[in-house]
Amino acid sequence: MSIVNTLSLESNRQIKINFDGGDLSSDAGLLLIKEFVRKLGIDNLLGKVFKTNDSALFRYHTDQKNLLQMIYMIIAGYFEDDTSDELTNDPVFKSVLEKDTLASQPTLSRFFNRMDEDTLNQLLMIGRILRKRVYRIQMPQAVILDLDSTLLDAYGKQEGRAFHFHYQSNGYHPLVCYDGMTGDLVKIQLRD
Image (cartoon, rainbow, N blue to C red; front, side, top):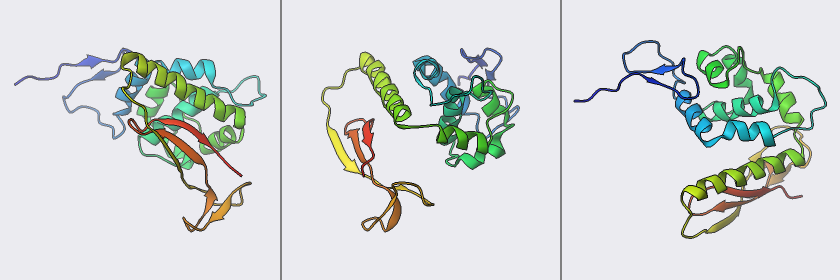
């Protein structure tokens, strides 16, 4: 029988992974996700390509870190930005984001409010860049474009939301294009 030795993360040598039953955390899997993000260069890509329409000269919680925080939160199953208040001092999240404290719910809400059409186009460009990186490793034999629509629920009086009879709900009804083989999002477009 073989055992797993203590491993150090390449992204942060101070973090050790072992199976000796020491300090436990329910979100510790994010440390391995961080390693994957670092290997693909997603964190550097976001720092170079992603920027909201922010006029502030300095922010403690940068756009890149706010976006990464939301990505890690969603991966860990925290889908609402208000859960960030519960995670503000979570040791795994602080380690993954390399911060002393996480952005609070009001900070994330202001971050989302700074997003505009240009920001959404930047996110689509980031997706294209990442697909190209993956395709350099293995080019797909075929691409099947899966065009569909979906409902993005809205729980207030947001501009542009409408009642959709098919879904029996209020929200947005964007057109979505996926790679049918991989499930990768190719493009999403809101419509009037």
